[in-house]
Length: 104
Image 1 (cartoon, one colour):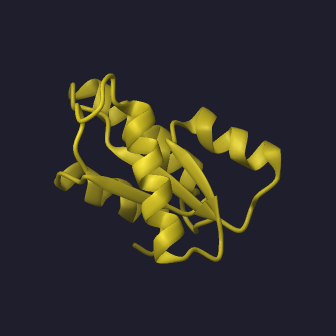
Image 2 (cartoon, rainbow, N blue to C red):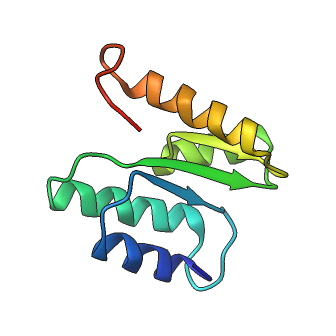
């Protein structure tokens, strides 16, 4: 997606296992897009989708803002495949009420 509005529109039209969101995007920033996605999930009684923020913004305030917006995790760029997979696994484990209760 090129902007946050496109990300929200794509989410509206499909089912996703994982959303990777940047904080800074044109038209609608990533945090606002996450808030809209979380509201859509509540309104439509959808189960929560794992949302990870990938950003060059890495100060504690940035990380807290991501979590407050509804993200499940915040990773600093640059991202490697191994770091991303570990972070997704960690986030899934923290969301699961019991081991294996939620699959990726």
